Every structure is written in C-alpha cells, then in structure tokens.
Image (tube, rainbow, N blue to C red; front, side, top):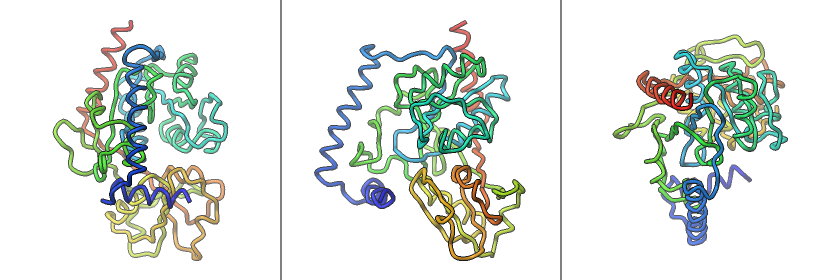
Length: 334
C-alpha cells in the first residue's frame, strides 16, 4: 500500500501528472504551517537550543533520498582528517522505541536505532546518537565528551536545534520536481529556503552555479555472511537480482547498470522492513542490495547476498570550506 501511494504521488511530483484540487488545497495549508513555524523560530517566539558544540545540519527540501547519508559519512571522514572529532545525531527513523535517547553501537539492531544511524556507526566508527529531539541526541554525545563537532543527518527542518552550518543536498536527477509543497509536490519548504543554506550539494546531474558536485561511486560487493569483497565486474554477464528499499531505488539500479551489470530490479518503499521471503526470488542467483538495506538483512542472509557500498566523492575545497566555518564557530564560542 505504501509503495503504491508513493508511486501515485511521484507521478504528480516528478512525472508530469497535474496534482488535483484537493492536493493543491492541502499544499496551501501545509505551506502556511511551514512558514509560520519557521518564522516563529526566526523571530524568537520559539527557541532554538544550542548543543554546546558546533552543529552541521545535512538536509534537503524535497522528501525522499538525495544522498544525505553518504554525504554525512564523507563529512565524518573529511572532518576527522582535518583534526576534528565528529559525532552524528539523528532521529533514527523507523526504530521501535522512537522516544528513547540512545547511543548507537555498531552491534545494534536496525529496529532499535534505525537503519541509517546504524550504517553510519558501522562505516565510520564515529559516535552516533538517536533521539526524537536532535538536541537530546546532541547532549548525549556532548556529555560524554565524545565529539567536538556534531553532524545532524536529515535535520534541516528541525529548527529546535540551533545550527552553525547548513548543507542542502539535492537529487541532481529529480531536483525539486514540480516545485510544489507537500502533498501536491515533494517540497517540505518553499524553494526560497535554499538561499539561506551555507552550501548546496548536488548528487549527480549537472550542478548549477554555486552548487557543489557530488558523485556516488560503487566499486565492490561485500558478502552479508562473511564480509568478503568481490569486484562488481565479477557479476557482469551473470543472472542476478538487485533489491533496494530506498527513496529512489532506480538510482541504485542505474548505478549497477553503469558498471555493466544487468540485474533484475526489485524496488521497495523507503526504509522497508525486509524479511527473508522478500528476497526469495525463486532461484539461486546473487542478490545485490544497498548498504542501508543490508544492515536489516544480515541476520537472515544467504551466502549469495551482497551489500554494495557507495563512496561519496566531493571536491576537497568543499570540505576545507566547511572546516573553516567550524573553526570560526569554535573560536567565537571559546
């Protein structure tokens, strides 16, 4: 049902189907609420709380995946190389107890902490915390002296958390769709909101003036059973399946095809809660999946199931600029 509704909406957001009167009316109401909420924080009627450490927010204007998590991982690694001790905070979408403030361990289950925070913790070994209110996750890391800078994964509209740097991520293929607000379009806030962000990163496609290009690179497949890696070239010419429970599964399938693979594609709704039967395709052909999906499937993985890690590539000048902003903030608060 969720997948069918997503397809129906995306046909209107990205496919050229005009949204109806009801969707447009709801969009006007949504826009009024979003505007009022932002103005309340900007005016001081509602208060943003500071975490006690500089905060970088990575987010988007359009719902769905734009590459925020790969960018967050790349930021952790780049800031660490520049002398920082970064930590990551997140809501932890999809976890069972959304009210719990929790420090994420690489050994956790995705149902307890969320698939994206678990993936970040495993890939980076950085301190990660989840909470419904990001400020609570931030305080958990600050109190433990685990980090000197915090990266909020998907927190652009979470105004209760004060931030020092805002990074907007755009899907370069779909960009902002029809440019309308939810539910008539994919936008969480009006397009003018982008002007207030410090940096705009474009994942794929052709960057426009002032935008930072990002490219997601696939290189190998990693066994869910034993962690052994194989070049993707090993799968060329072979029958195989590709499964993706992300906001834009076609992005993953297209990336595999660009590597010369011809998988049978199986798309699921974002954050799909996989079971073994979901990946039983009636044969013994290998199954390739995203890392985000793999963290939920490792417990019942078969020998021929593989995760395909992605590496976000961005200009060093971008990471240098973010690091410079953070040092300025650290100096101002010293």
